[in-house]
Structure formats: C-alpha cells, structure tokens
Length: 370
Image (cartoon, rainbow, N blue to C red; front, side):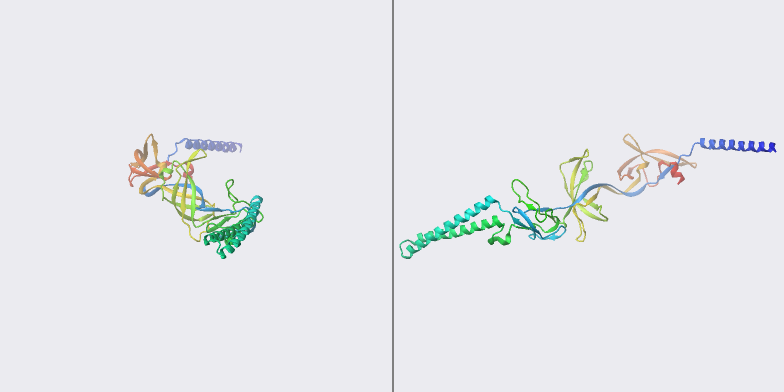
C-alpha cells in the first residue's frame, strides 16, 4: 500500500514539473506582432476650432435720471418689454438750496421789474392818449412791459423746476419721469423705491435706473488664439451652441476681429464678435455662456488615412504598405505627401491610392482579447 502511495506522489510531482516546464516554454516563445490595417478612403476633411464666449445684446443702454432726487415709484420690472419714451420710474426732486434761493430771488426781482413796467406803461399811455408822446415811444414802453411779464413767467418756471422738477409749461416732458431711451427688454433695475439717485455730470456718471437692450439683435463675444486668427475673415460663418440650450444651435456671421491682442494665461488672444441669427420665439437671455464652432479650412473628397498610421522622420512623412509574399505579410516603408488633418484623419496628397493597404499601430494585448 505504501508502495502505491509513493508512486502516486511521484507521478503528481512529475506532472507538476512537466506542466511548469511547458508553461514557461510557451511564455518564452516570441508573441506574434499584430498591426491594425487601414485602406485609404475618400472623405471630407475639415479643421475646426471651438471658441468659448457669451451671448450679449448688441445695444445695451443704461437709463439715467436728468435730475437728482429720490425714487418714489417703479412702474416696470426686469424682463418686461418697454417702448422708447415709456415711463420706467418716477423721481421726487430734492432741491439744491443754493439753486432754490437763487430762483426765488430771480422771481422776486422779476416781479419788481414787472410792477415798475406797469407803472411806466400807464404813465406813457396817458401821455400817448393826450398826443404828448410819439407812437414810437409808446411802443418801446409796451415792449418793456411784455418783456417784464415774460421774464416773470420764465423765473416762475425755473423755480418750479428747481423745487419740483417740473413746471406747468412742460409737464408732459417732466424730468421727474424716467423714460426708456430705446425699445427693448428691461434687463435690470438696480434701484428700489426710496433710493437716492443723482444725474450725470462732470464728476460722475450718474445713477443707473434701468438697463434696457434689444434682445432681437444679439452678438457672440469671445477670444481666439493668435495661431488661428489668421484664418478668420469678416462674414465667416459660425455655429453657436449655448450651454443652457443643449438642443439648439444658431447660425452666426463673424463681423469683428480685434486689431490688438490681449494676454490671457500667458497666451495672446484676439477678441471677436459675431452676429447671431435668432428667431422671434427663441428665448435667449443676456450673458448665456456659448461655444462657437468655426471651420478654419476644408478639403472635399480627399484621400485619407488615420493619422496614427504615419511615421515622421525629419521633414518627411512615411507609411508602411502591406505586401503579401507567399502568404506572409511584409511591410514596405513608403514616403507620402500629406495635407489637411482634422486630428483623426489626414489628407494624403501624394503617394497612396485607394487600392493600397497601410499598416497602422500595433494591436496591444487588451485589444486582442476584445
């Protein structure tokens, strides 16, 4: 019994030894090198670039008051449409005490002059009725009376404007009514009822009551690298996609290329603007982030191969043509002339035909298993 046990153990050890030897021998054998193979195809090749930017209205206007004061009423809200001349807000005037005092003084002086003009007129009229003065002298006194009345009316109007922001003679054009200067959509109203506002003058830009823009006239604004700006020209078509509107794309036409570069993250870039074509029903908001796709160059019906099949040596470019010799594959190094590349496929201008087969990169082990 012990004799059989020893034989069985010896047999197991022998099998293990033989199996290990066979495994190591197989591993030591050189693996067959397998390459991808490509046949040149006729395709359209285009080189594109993507520019990031945002959507903006072409004309965005800040509506400012003509006088200083306090907001008493807001008649519009952001998002509402407004016509040119439509009232957005009302302002209560806080008069400047120096201007108020000067205006009141002007009214009093104009009233004194008017009273004196009336006395002179009555005196001159009595003399004229008695034919003691000429008509010319009487006309001069009459004119002085009319001028005095006009000066008093003008002084009273000026006082009302300083005190109330509006006079009885120009109530329809009151500067206390803040009106939109263009037709469009109200993008923002940065003030609230009770806020103090000031008019634009030499020392400041004034308080913005509202921002209004025509949302039917939009532009794309972005920056392009200096290595690509040379391919651009005015009128160049673009395709705009907006991050918030994934299912929509819009055509655009390039209309501005900055003549001066700006440095951004160590690279020189040029600002561009493009007119975006939108429909009346497209709900696009100001400030949307967007991408613009531009075709920098294009070749139609070009003979192409994957760019991974190329080998570069100095200024020359080569491929390996596949030749069948007695059932064995051989690879012949062959120089080609290349053209436009889209990053995946490349145009072959010279050196290949549609009947050729080209060796690609080596198939790695994971690809073989798949």
